[in-house]
Image (cartoon, rainbow, N blue to C red; front, side, top):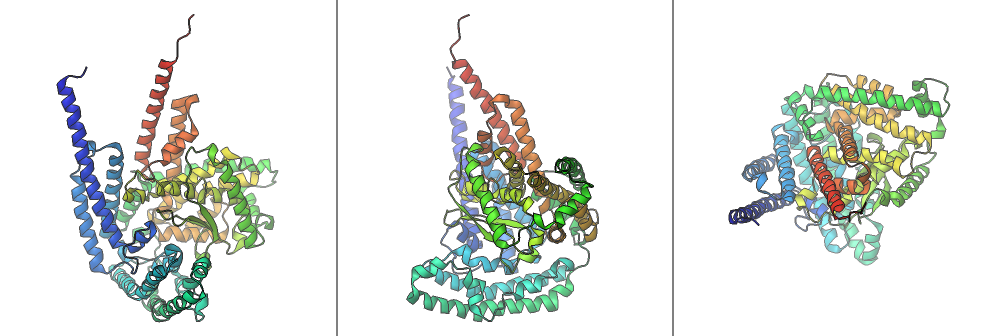
Length: 595
């Protein structure tokens, strides 16, 4: 029997927890409303109706005001004691803390003065607006047209930010911006019917409205393109040509920028979610490549290739039999892989998402500058599915022997499965449901490539070599990213290392290296996350032995959404203890046999 004092203490603890949870929920709501008001496109993505007729205010004064507000939010958050919170709210607290600290650090490092690089920026994202908004009704199209008209103002704000970057010495390296003009000028179309702002509108949206209702909407879109969008793109092209590109820097590493080394250390912590040095990351990549290279040698022997591993890599890069002859062949092969994967998922997961995904080609205007594939997440309200985008540009650089690993990474059981489950987590606060920890998201996707071995993939030794080559690609990122941004490597050194240690085509190697140059630290997340998830699974298997259930393990990994790696490990340790306790309880309840 509990003493009265113990009962009182338990009631006080429960009351204290309720109060703390309420305080945190109120703060989360305040921050979330602020974020939705500040970012209308974020509101679009989650199905929130506010701000659908305009774009964000990215004036310098607005950016400064947002930074001040976030600092105040962080002060309020720090007054909420983590130990007073329930388990779910402790997750919310940690995710909000990291979000706010990251946003404040971005402002301190003035990342808003570098809003574009070779792969991203407002000018590259904006043509996806029809797909993001997915307008269907006349009201939806009115909002879409209003945003097209607002693009003129928004472009002017981006130009002013970039001018500020020029003054502050915060500009991109010239080498990676060499195609930026063509990216912009591709939208200066004379035939408006070929504009992505019309062609990216779903055909069923037009047909459902009917010809009579669609005709005036189409005319309004064309007017907005002529009066706002195309002049804004022209103005931005002129600015790039005359001001920005001539001011771009020669050195490629982040260390060359003001506060560059401090900035890179911050990026490491941001993207990996752990405390680790550039030197340790670099050495991890070297060690991983040595292990992977040994496994590659075994496959080379298995297929009876008579030559060195380097010669085998060159054979894979150059033999036409390893490459699709058409975009249709590449897309169809990927679709078949995904269909096979879909049917085996219940072997690995107890819980599967309801939100579907599709397969599309990467748009031609960005395909030459981007990588082999990427994934576009679903809307968190379920109104838009996820999309696996596959690059069909330059087919001689898209090897079929890597397609199993690539598809498992980008779709299922990789990005789509994880992010769709996260989008459906009703028990999380919306701001936590939008969490975006790269080490978790990309670490999971890389881990998922190896999961293919557990559901019947990679039986073809060339496909298994493709999986290893994809892993070597991510291990090489640890070496190359730290080499470029911390150790003073040249771009050519990075290209040479990737050529020697991966089976990527020359085109892909250049695109990848340029990506790392323009996005310091991001490439470190993949292998760091995969190593952590794989290690955590091995520990669980060792602890639980025959009682380890891979479906239950994966469900536990994914049930809190994208979280920092230390928090994932903590949650899996709790799960292991729960499994032990559950097993012990079962043993106690079993009747004892008489001897």
